[in-house]
Length: 369
Ligand code: UD1
Image (cartoon, rainbow, N blue to C red; front, side):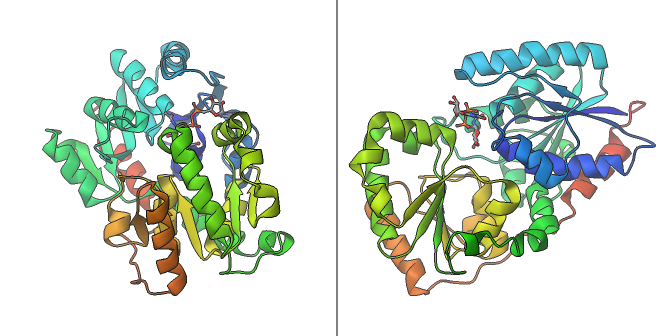
């Protein structure tokens, strides 16, 4: 079975890594091909993840780069169609919810190729998020929908997706986390940064809803500087956010230099995991980090109005607070007071999701079926 696996942007790499690894264990029956769309291309946004996670070099890089949503999606589709026509795969595997995920799904389906979506069924119900549009388009077209939790199963069923297409397999991103946790623990990065375990916060922020609107970003920056007055904050900064902070004049307005807010370059996978696992709390608008902190048992303050990952609030350590500064500050106070319920790890987030996925593909998706 010839399978094209697609990855395009930073959060895809830790999801595709265990799938490729598992497929490579079944080389007698699976011929895996890795396509990188090139949606993310900076060394720190892409290549360093391949090195850290031991992902084989992509067989093909479409090198689409940045652009508007339509430009980026269209470029992926044009280039991926050529790949499908020359390689003629039996199946395409897409992960997550980025533009590359949707673009490759549409392209493959129109060529009559079956598609499997890993991390299907997540819904924020917020159509202003480009990712929500990507998720809906991808899931409605796919033949195999691999889910991370029961909420996702219910979402798909309520949208009329036949239950035969849905497979609750667990979370491939957690496969990667569990595999690398001990490797990351002793890296020594926090010592080099002059930080003490459990005595600093980690911040990530790149969602258009937080960083593109200068009034929202300004309010959040004020809150973050106030937090940095109580506990050092490390902020590995996404290129999108860096550009906005530089061009808006916020860098000089907010006296970041004299504060305990450290802006650093985006980190590799292992370094970031090291930082997160030793932190007192994480402040973020990321999707995946809500899941990673739940497994690590680290409080996560999610600066968004909704989440497509409600299980992390339901059983994990995630607090959804929105992006109003007073709400963020209130939750930080609660975390610092230590008065928090202990979280649990969601069902099947056990490091075996990729094994389950490949088993389903081998049993169900062989070409003769
Ligand atoms: C994308 C995903 C988002 C994911 C995020 C993780 C979509 C719609 N969004 O958002 O779901 O959470 O990746 O990072 O697919 N840039 C660089 N170097 C790079 C990549 C991007 O400088 O390697 C800059 C460019 O100015 C680009 C901007 O970042 O225009 C945004 O990149 P893009 O891939 O369009 O979206 P992200 O915000 O990264």
